[in-house]
Image (cartoon, rainbow, N blue to C red):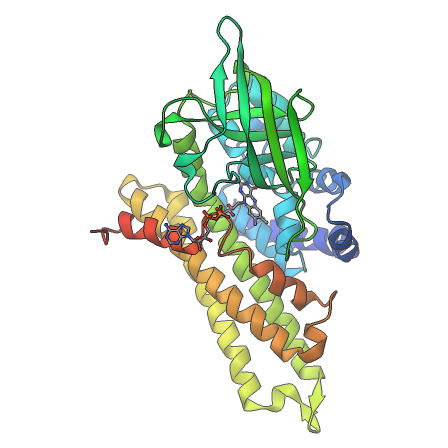
Length: 385
Ligand SMILES: Cc1cc2nc3c(=O)[nH]c(=O)nc-3n(C[C@H](O)[C@H](O)[C@H](O)COP(=O)(O)OP(=O)(O)OC[C@H]3O[C@@H](n4cnc5c(N)ncnc54)[C@H](O)[C@@H]3O)c2cc1C
């Protein structure tokens, strides 16, 4: 997209949030879910398929276009949980769009980008999420039929309660990363149950589910790419997911800063506005500095990812981990200071900075815990023993 097209997309995304999201967000937070109609409205506005190829029903843009869209939405008051719920397709679909058969693209990618279906990505299991190579859910070929039989369980699955289908990491081969495949499992398939909606500290409007699979028969046609290529597919898409979570982090931080600066101009203590205190102004500047560092670094890493120079490969994977960490540290500090400067108001349920403060806490855990990503970066940057 040209500079002007990107600016227009950002403005349209912000306008969409002001019109379709902001008036209802607190109610959705309280209900613990986002309505399906929002997916349809977002698709009509051209927001769901921005960075997906045109051949798969998307708009053919790139990661930088999708960052502009997300920034516009956060600027207008979208929450991290809302973005996780509305854009779950961003983690459930890229493997299908890149490696799935034309049939999988027609059945799952197109309708999801049109807002008609909801998809989830299920990797994490009750036994652990950080060590993806160790997943235990099995998919065994039933001899003489065109089916896999799936057994196992997944947990913490975003949009899993609402999902019509789940892109599921399963073990089709031996132990370790070489035995993992991706299989699309549809809601309603006998033996597949959504066990419960998990209550959380934040991301309240984004439903999170536990899934169980007992002798679930899944057609071989639902395999994404080659058998036992799942780990590589997951790892490849993780770069974009980590950059997206970095945008969540500095996006909610930037919004919290804006709300806090406005509050500090208005609120008076000891006979003068809060912002008249040098210590408060310096705090706001420090919040600003951290947001700008996170935003600039994330943009730089995203641009290198989009450029796709082969010699940058490993460094960009490492830098995506570090961009996420930088942005997450920024959100942790900025959202905390935003609550502090709002005083008691900042602690009240329903105050926007309170929501961002709670939502920020998932960001150093989801999409790869900071410790795990730092260790990955150590290996990729040559600091391992
Ligand atoms: C709200 C929410 C939404 C989610 N959405 C999804 C989803 O849609 N799909 C999906 O598949 N998963 C999802 N997850 C799961 C998420 O990706 C995992 O929670 C995350 O990867 C961490 O896995 P774990 O919780 O099993 O923690 P564990 O792997 O048990 O690790 C626990 C903690 O130990 C530390 N740690 C772990 N390994 C190391 C190490 N090697 N060195 C040092 N410290 C370490 C970290 O601090 C980590 O947080 C979601 C989670 C939440 C809470």
